[in-house]
Amino acid sequence: MADYREMWANLGMDLEHHDVLCEVLPEAFGGIYLIQQDRPKGMDFYDFVVAEIHGVRPAEMMQHQKEGGKVFGTFCVYVPDEVVFAAGGIAAGLCGGSQFWVSGGEKVLPANTCPLIKASVGARLDKTCPFFLIPDMYVAENTCDGKKKAWEIMAGEVPLHIIDIPQMKRDRDIAAFEAEIKDFIAVVEKVTGNKITAESLGEAIKMINNKRRALQRVYNARKASPVPISGKDALLVTQINFYDDPARAAQMANNLADELEQRINNGTGVFPNNAVRIMISGTPMAIPNWKLHHIVESLGAAVVVEESCTGTRYFENLVDESATTLEGQIRALAERYMKTNCACFTPNSARIDDIVRLADEYKVDGIIDTNLQFCNLYSTESYLVKQVMTEHNLPIMHIETDYSEQDFEQLRTRVEAFLEMLRK
Ligand code: BJ8
Image (cartoon, rainbow, N blue to C red; front, side, top):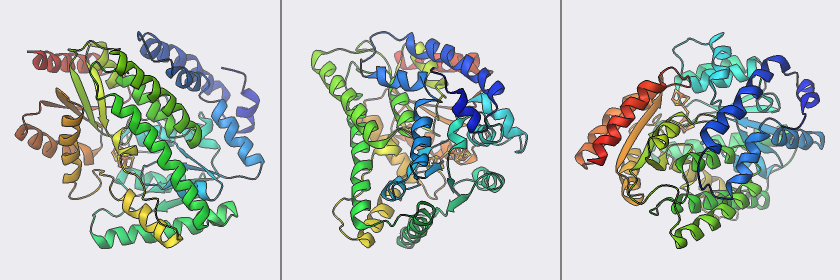
């Protein structure tokens, strides 16, 4: 990584502690990613982003601030990024995915909190991640109890706006979310000092939709057999899309998709034709959480799709681009975002329908339904997921895990047994 120490010092980072992370990440990335054979050339960009993970994009964000722009940190796919970009701001997904930050979160949160929340809080409080220190505002939401309370602690650190996410999907809930988007627009206008117009919101809707379309192309390529890209690589693409510049993210994903489509035409794959095809469903895997994908793929099976917020839930639905008034665009945003099927909703049977549909579309042999430890929403829902998959004769196993390496061997043994069963 180039030398960003001065930038990090200006952000008030704990440089000594951060050095520890800078030392371990390249080795971890090398051992999980760079050892893969026949990776698409299009992954070079994403490898570069990881190599410069706390440098290049943070520097761009700080440059944006120097020029008078504002940066908003987000933690959930229900936050409409379009609003931020329409006001000339930058939105960046911040969820923490490393065990490195968990102990910092545990200083203020109960130990039985999900690692994503602990890592996110720890990254901020320990001052060991530039992405958490740059934003002018955090945009949080009340999806789960752990996050809801963690934001009250984070609010002591940084200006924070909370979006009230309805927990049901009736017409009046969509209308309530529409009202939340209007409030959010007012907040973003105040912070940025820029008025959002139908023109700017229309452009932002198109830009974010283009990113979604590019990711759809990458995922569609994963339906092929042999699969032209590993699950690990596809996951990395989605993870980086959470905070990269959206226009560049779309361009890079489209370049990659071009290459993958060419690979399909040539019959080139990264796993043999008969490799077991796995879907991973459940809680998001924030960067650098690659644990489960690494276990599955190092055992010779291919992860071909993720039903998660770092997978299909992030890009499957587009915002209707036909509205020309702010009213109509806000309605279209509300309708699109409320199609996302998170376990914080009740009932959430549409998510289970999605898993059945994706299993068919991606021709999966088995499903690993997973949740981060202490995520009651997804772990409880796993009972219903299993019930419906069994009715559809879709083999499924459930895994609860965290960011540590402690359960690595145990998980490996369980996944190996599941794969053996699928191979019979
Ligand atoms: S839309 S999945 S990104 S809330 S933080 S709920 S793992 S206990 S992340 Fe999420 Fe939005 Fe839903 Fe998606 Fe569980 Fe942890 Fe809560 Fe989590």
